[in-house]
Amino acid sequence: MSDKVIISCAVTGSVHTPTMSPYLAITPEQIAQQAIEAAEAGAAILHLHARDPADGRPTPDPKVFDRFVPRIKAATDAVINITTGGSTRMTLAERLAYPLQAAPEMCSLNMGSMNFTIHPVARKITNWQHGWEKPYVEGMEDLIFRNTFRDIRRILKLLGEGCGTRFEFECYDIAHLYNLAHFLERGLVKPPLFVQTIFGILGGIGTDADGGTAGLHPQRVDPKAGAR
Image (tube, rainbow, N blue to C red; front, side, top):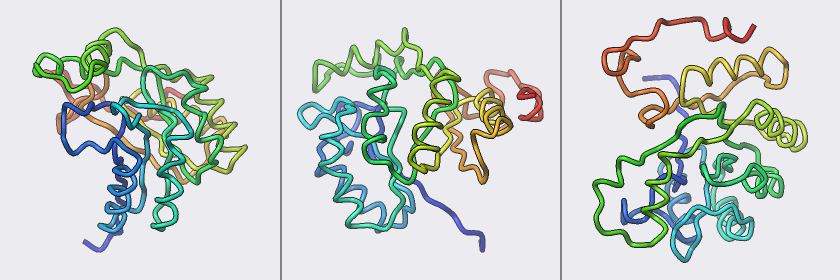
């Protein structure tokens, strides 16, 4: 293949818990090391979340981010992508705390509210490393990951217009593409667009190659049609 490929590496995220993998980066040192190694292996973008070093739970604390982001920036020429998604339990103010402080060249931006869950995984785990993990995973069954149109517009204004940040538009469902088209037509989003489509999260689009789930095959439509 002669086409160029952009590799984006999300080093830790906020979905998985320490019990699920011994390789999950938790401490600032681990996050920095794995991010630098990913860049050395060819990753052009490093998508960064923070974890509480004591027990691995997701945290929006700028002080924790500051323990690894500057180190990564100094050691690589990769694009630093700071999450604005945070986790389903964080407020928008918490999710924006470090991005507004750091004014990074790129941030992730979730393009719609959704039922975002991996709660069935909890049934497969009997021994948890930390007390917060089981209720965190099981509690996803009754949570909505909030990303309203007003929330999205606020992020675009504060970070896009205010800080010159570009966005990785995270689309977990077909509706999120319509939402992105809406902001594009309003002029709040400007091309070229960097779209990440995510498959397999319960509450979002499935992993079937033809776009269907359990025998249901949605009609293919023009993504811009619903934005007019």
